[in-house]
Length: 151
Image 1 (cartoon, one colour):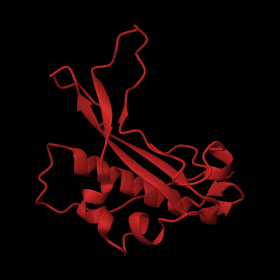
Image 2: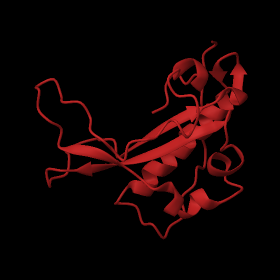
Image 3: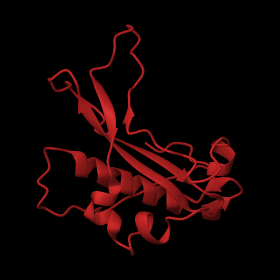
């Protein structure tokens, strides 16, 4: 989910560079309102081992991956710890994104086209980690429509 995406410099003041923002390998969600520990955690994918991240012409992992642009794009896969699958709808992936000031549309606001690109990429990673999807079948966005409000 990407909501209210703003420039990294204004939203993440404690992190000055991509190297200083080490991403954890495992993220445990907060306990629910009943104080029960969740039956899952998120494990960081090693994006360097995945074919699509090695493409030099890939927008997120190629031409836009540098300081001031897409500085961080980490993907986490949900891992069930209880041995049973969650019922109903659930998130299967989390994406941790840091965008620099060079991709702003307005001052300190990431350009809407970049937000849409990152949303599309995040959805693609959801498909990538979904165990029910045939990995031999290529998937791509056929249509994406976004509406933005004025800043």
